[in-house]
Length: 276
Image 1: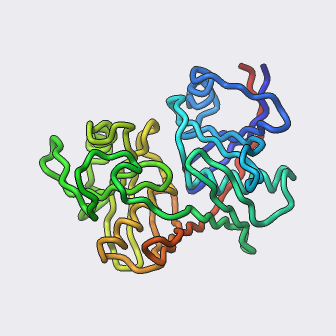
Image 2: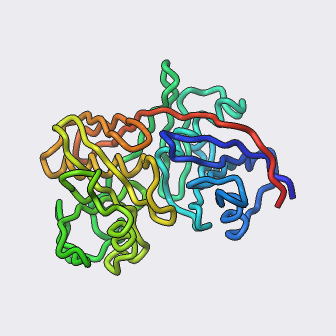
């Protein structure tokens, strides 16, 4: 089986994007792991699949698979690449694109400068929405780890996030602590882990250890979750520049019960074909 694909990235968070509308695509977890492998396959953080929608109000269905082969609910950097892909491939002529994901409908907007804005929906803070095991809902929770008792925020952006504020992202133990929190028993479906340094009310630095992919150069939903957590705690303004290792995003959130908006670039790298 030969599969045509496009390699893309959003701030260095890289993707293999596959048109599942004009070619028959039915990948196993093993095949996804092979494609994602940086030595034996193409190499990517996530594989993105474009499909026909199942919901009447959507133009496309957007599916996301991590490098370990597991399907996940949402990916913000991937959503921007998804938008550029369907526009570049002529799959749509619209500049505003409603897209179905397993966690709900999102809307992708092509801006005049070529960047993509994504309506990421309303952040969820209810523990059961992640899921996260807690008897109460709070802006911050105590979490027992090998590094001691840490204070975290728990946020759903359609996928689960734990956000930990640190003095410096440069010195944060992202790999060791990220892996431990990802697999913490209080997160039954595992969790993405954000290490956030607050620079000012309008600026943060962020590193993210992604569920099933380890640390990536950028995580769109992680940036959204960090800003939502910081806003809920009264530390951040409505519009925040998020500086990630791969570049910058702008996140806007008016507050409770309002949708959150993410704006940033999406980059085409190359086209290819792989035999499976």
